[in-house]
Structure formats: structure tokens, C-alpha cells
Amino acid sequence: MDGLNLDKQRSRMRGEDRRALIMAETKIIFAEKGYRGASTGELARASGITEPILYKHFGNKKKLYIAVLTMIGEQFLDRYQGMVKRRAETDLTDCLLNLLLDYRNAAMQDHAGLHLLMNAAVESNDPEVTALAERHDHEIYTLVSNLLTQAQSQDILPRRLDLRVAAWGTLSLLFALQYRAKANLFEEFNERTIREINRLWFQSLRVG
Image: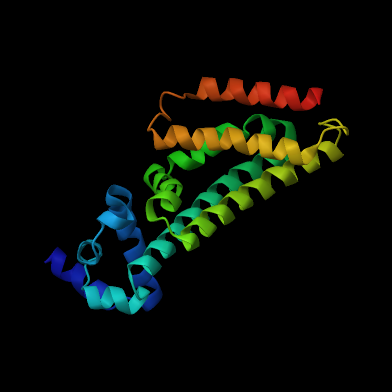
């Protein structure tokens, strides 16, 4: 009876709600099998729909894949930006000292999703997917750059510091965390280690 009720509820879903359900369910399949390994039949079954319904909402597998990647990227950025901005509003120095740890914590809330996002450009070998990953990285760069600019204006960081270089250096540390996630080593790359790396990074910026 519960399964029957669930099927009825799904049949009455609005288009927007159904799309959200399909993306949430197919994200798991894409994360497990990658773009090439996931068949449209398997993606449809995971969502409790038929292949024609899948095509109706997304057109083809590539468009579904891009929609899923976009969703993952936006959700991650919302989490990370929220953490960073809450800290910055209270104490900008504390925000900078926890920049890496907040990144890890935001990623750990959807480890599989971020893993999929990181592997997407290489795994699919598609220019559109690569451009999506680049836009994601640019959003993070902009966030970090704005924080450093604010810190310099408040004399937390020295005026002689090249903020562009500092921002790219920060991203290199964040990318290192991404590779740890890819290798499933987030747990080994523990909070104490990340805090110490963050402290040394921040200290180097203050020296200028």
C-alpha cells in the first residue's frame, strides 16, 4: 500500500518537483557509475519513471548530467558561502583561519556529489561540462578574493600583499582538499591537520 501511495504521489507531481526528484535520484547513479557507465534505463528506474518521461524532462542523458552537476555545484556553493559569510560577519580573522575547514565541512555534507563534480570534466571529456567546472571554480575564486580584499581594507592583511596571487594560492590549497576527497582521504586529512595548514597559510599572508 505504501508503494502504491508513493506511485500515486509521484504521478501527481508538478514538473518542477519531478525534475528535482529525478536529479536527486540520478545523482547517486552518476556518482557510482560515472557518465558513461550509467544507462538511461537505469537512471529512469532509479527515479521511478520510464525512459520516455526522463527524455520528456531532460531531452537526453547529457542534459540530465549537466543539470545534476549544476545542482550539486550550486548546493555546495550555497553551503560553503553560508558558512564563510556567517563567520565573516562575526570575525573576519576567524573566517580566514577556518576557510579550509569550512570547505571540508561543506564538502562532507555531500561527499558523493562533490566527488562527481570533480570527476565530471575528465570523465565525460565534454567542453560544456568542463566549462561548468570552470565556472564553479571561478565562483570560489571570487568568494576568496572578496574576503582577502575585505581583510586588506581592514588592515588584517598588509597593503603590499598581491591579492590576486594570494587568492590563487588559496585555491591551490582548496584544490588539494578536492584531491583528498577524490582519493577518499578526507577522514585521514583530519581537522587538526587542516587547521594547522590554514594557520600557516594565514600567517604567510600576514607576513606578506
